[in-house]
Image (cartoon, rainbow, N blue to C red; front, side):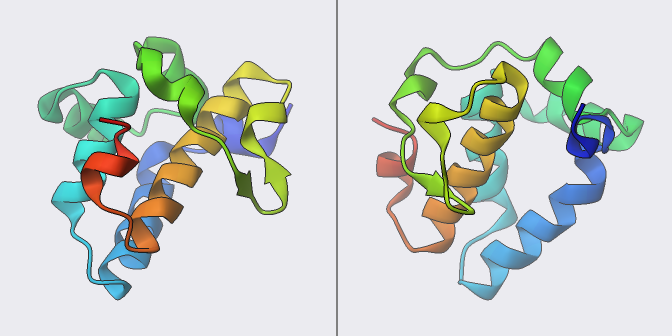
Length: 113
């Protein structure tokens, strides 16, 4: 099992925020990306962050967006579409969406609309 599975989403969330804010993006955009991917509303997302939910439990409770399979490309040299473990693939989807936002991609393109 990967260590990230038992890591709380709340411990990684501020790192996502910091990365995006350095690039001129906002926490609201990050929240929109996360809610799009997971099907959680903002209240549910806030609850998971406050509760210290692990990535494993976070994605177990999520209703993954049907368009998530369109998320392709590499994160840390690994193609997300080739990641075998379903949980790790979902975590990589989130990483990829954050990377796309940080690189200045328009939000509607990041959300595959």
